[in-house]
Image 1 (cartoon, rainbow over the protein chains, first blue to last red):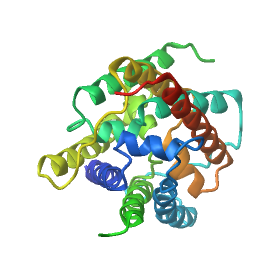
Image 2: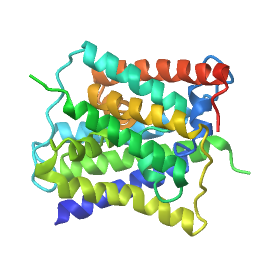
Image 3: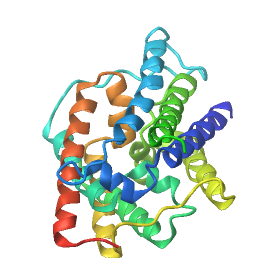
Image 4: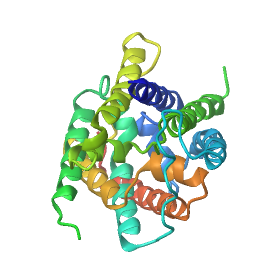
Length: 137
Length: 141
């Protein structure tokens, strides 16, 4: 039960952070990505702000075997750069640039983004479902 | 008037703080596409309640803030068909590449993960190309 409350709190703080930082504003996000045009470099402030507390958290996590709820800390990912990672990131970036929306901000906007955000989310869920249909080894 | 960067930075700290809480309290990596994707393809069935609780907080509090006038809603930049295409690309791409801005960007870069850093550079590059293409094609809302 505590795990669920913590998860909801983390989700809520994430959502407020996305709202305050401007990540839920597609026009601003497009400006952040527009490196070949009228680039707005203030995305760097968002990323720096986000990375600092998380870097500290990883350092704390490295000294512990378990999280507060007793779950083991996640293992570090294998350092494999493969076609799946590169292709997936490239495809994701195209969609992000076209819409100014990535998964977190899209879900954070569900209550106020109106029909456009709902359309985007429905298509995003369909894209995830499509991937799930591909047989894996 | 407060400088623009303060809001950007403060919002970023909240995002990173949320990821830090999720890691230290729940032992989870906070990746938005992974949390939702696991519910959609069934791979996250074992901890579906935790995923749903996270998503409820993520969708709920920002909605409350906007409805009470404390936060501001923003306008879309693309028409419905572009949003459909973009949503399909984002959904498929984040599952193929195992992460999005929160997983690879925030959680990956902060642990100096080579995968996270490379993925972030790639999606920033194609994101920039897509913005340029959308402008040339006149794709806007």
